[in-house]
Length: 153
Image 1 (cartoon, rainbow, N blue to C red):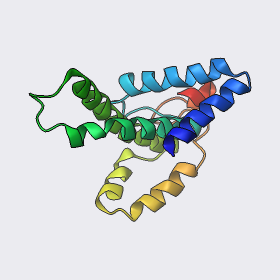
Image 2: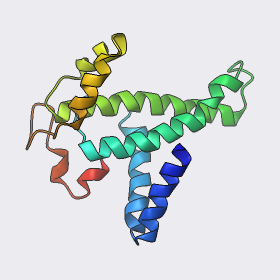
Image 3: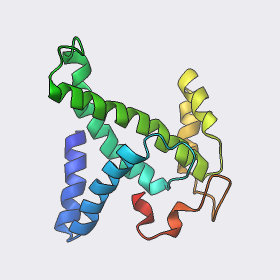
Image 4: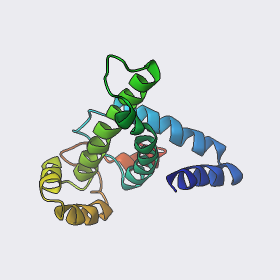
């Protein structure tokens, strides 16, 4: 199902003649995955949270099979090790982008902790992620929507 959604959205952009945007989205995903995975201090836009999360869900599903098939890291193949590294970055960057989204609405990232400990709190967090970001700069940085392609990072 995720494959259909991901590739379907990508194909729609290509069919509509938005090849540059489709390529920019994939490039921005990998840039965010590897350069902002440990960035828990800045802000990100609402739209980029959704785009990144859909692609990230696809990556996590495709790479999580390495946990099931790999019995020992010492006997793992190079492909399994690469999958494990990508999976690790994808999981950490999931928390990172949620923290940056909370910063965009001028809330602390510590609100993620009750969601981990008390899962029903995730419903409240889900509604918080729907809120528009604060206009202009806040204590977590400048407005991510103030630059060109603001929805791509």
